[in-house]
Amino acid sequence: MYGGGNVFEAMKATALAEEDPKELAKFEARIDRGEKIEPKDWMPQLYRKQLIRMIEQHAHSEIIGALPEGTWITRAPGFKRKLALMAKVQDEVGHAQLLYSAAETLGKPREQMLDDLVTGKSKYSNIFNYPAFTWADSCFISWLVDAGAIVNQVANSKGSYGPYCRALERICAEESFHLKYGHHCVIHLATGTKKQQEMMQAAVNRWWAPMMHFFGPSDKISVHSDILMRWKVKMASNDECRQQFLDMYVPKIWELGLTLPDENLHKNLETGMWEFTEPDWEEFKRVINGDGPCNKERLAVRRMAEERGRWVRKALLAPKTKYVAPLA
Amino acid sequence: MTLKSLDPRVKRLGIPEEWDTPLSPKETLDQFENYEAFIQVKEGKALEHVGPVHAPNEEMAFLFAKEQYSRRGMFCNALCVVKTENIIGTEFSDNGISIYDAVTAQPSGIENQSYEVFHLLKRGKQHKYVGTVMAKDFEDALVVAKHTYPSQKPVFNVWIAESEHILTSNEEDKDMWETLKEKQYREAIDYKGQDRIKAYKERMGQA
Image 1 (cartoon, rainbow over the protein chains, first blue to last red):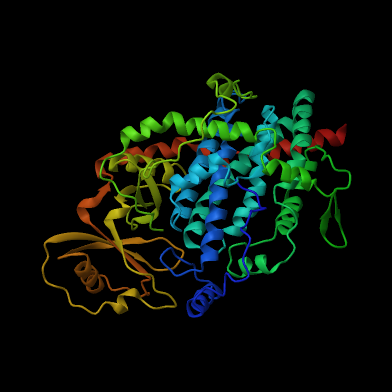
Image 2 (image 1 turned 180 degrees about the vertical axis):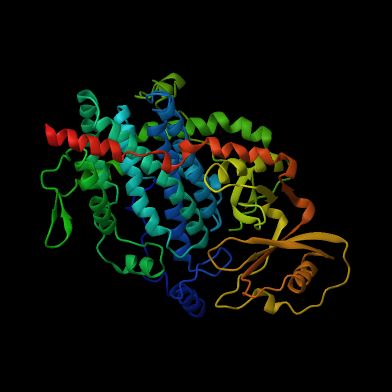
């Protein structure tokens, strides 16, 4: 699962001028023909850099995203829910594996990516810096955070980089289980006893603001995003993704008798666009930069896993091994 | 001070709130070497590349690949893994040109080594297994493959590996794929909620 609002690297005006114009033209022609770029192909430095960054953030989001839900495996109500949640969390970690490999084909070793996660150098989806207080929070994540991620991932799976697209196709297929499972959980609470309904409503109230942040701030068309769109790195704007999410899921939330904590939220029937109170982007920035309720815990748990597992990995490593990046 | 958390498991771990030292960077290969995994979804179909896994040895790579690429959905009939280092790939061609067009040499006639050959028929798709060739070395294997497995469609990329470097599931171990049928809870189709929504709406309508 992953949100928009990718943090792309600032681009120097000269970045493209330094590229070989003939190769660049060939590369762009290939993308225009709808062909995928494969690891051994020539590509502009900027394309490589932005893709590494994007895929890496996506991979980090998968493993960090497993933490707030993983919390609830042992306390999920009943055997079936435990089984399903465990399978879902396993999927998320599996997605991280696929994505790290896709990023590796671009030249950044996995070891370095994992280091950059723990040191805070690279980011992950901001929404996972919030805690899952109750079982209902976990249900909200499974259904709606995954739904948001699917909107993003389906768009990205039509991008231009072969290994990322292949990983995303596999991921999207698995996400459909997450979505249905999450919806199932929310339906049960929302149509259940009064206490269950209240618990679900409280979770919705807690998660709505982070959910609106999920797709990132509105990205006005700039030269920068223009190039990323032309190269099919970025496939849809943050606003487009947010609108699509609202259009698909707000009616499904309302039909369960749940309310959303924004009195301005409605669909403008003339424009066909959803209108809402502008999310608090100052809070968004504050949390991304480390000051959220769970940033510290997420990275501490990650670091602990790295350090306490190190001897096992060391014991298993065969001598005389050399590093080769994955092929595709 | 230990880290405060809502998660009882995290609380039990007693993680310090602040570390005294920065994390020492990972050493090279802390995450092990790469293997490429291939799966046959159905009897009679070609083995197809599904993706890489990191593992400390071949057997572990096989196990990880089974968990990563066959845990649900599509039925898996066979699986094989090859260390990435042991696969030699050609360059990629594009725009309808076959990579074999650039191969002009003739087979050496020396057939002392067995190689397995994989083709990529569309950019963005997966490499598929085409067959075995006997040749002198990798370059020769590419030449022999061009003559042995001519393709109607352009081949954009070829992978070749020595046969002995491939670890494949055994035919007699086939029952290891049987577990997939018990894992319906991993499938979207197992989660139907419309009846409950309908009942809820009716109840609300009456109230």
